Image (cartoon, rainbow, N blue to C red; front, side, top):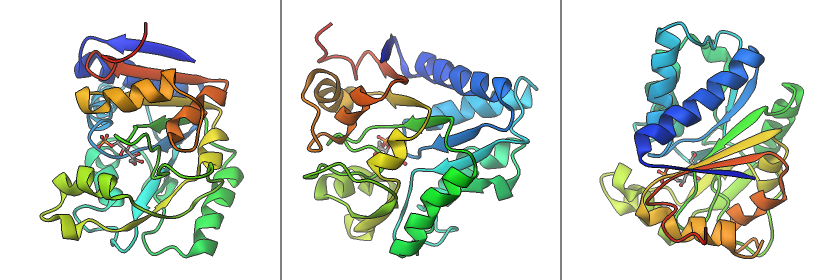
Length: 241
Ligand code: F6R
């Protein structure tokens, strides 16, 4: 695992975007696993800038997002499909047909089919991850065991509260999501986890300095061969250097 600590969010975003662009330059039809939330937004802005300047083209890239809220239509203002269109896809030369976000109306069979689609596309070359304050990756919440494939998850109160900032009221935050499983994430050839801000510091400490346990889902990443972690100073504050 390579861990990089950046002085601020901008420098982290440039480094993360450079890593993603580098993979696409090396393999123009790369399969990218993408995340939503606050942390990747500056990374997507930087990728859009790079695409505008002609530094990188996404014309042949395929993308698979980690998750979607259950019950939200793709055009719902808080749906992750809408987030991806607004934050990235509408600003780069990607073919919309090559972008995939799990359906918010998926049943168990459709969720399982998402993993098959990823495998049929050749598997994920780089999976981008954020981390929840409780250590979740995707929407794999702390649990008794590591989940395998894409499935429907019950969101914890802490995750719903953390994400309430995007909704008018806490009651509007969906109670479930469809999420790639830990198994799906671990099958990616490379993983890039990014975390910024002081509210992630204890999750980052437990992920990197604590035991590997499904109670801290991100801790599983220690078992993957090609993981890069990019942190800003605030998120790295509690690490034993
Ligand atoms: C988003 C996702 C989540 C977020 C995590 C951090 O697709 O799967 O695991 O990465 O909740 O969210 P932010 O970046 O908003 O703090």
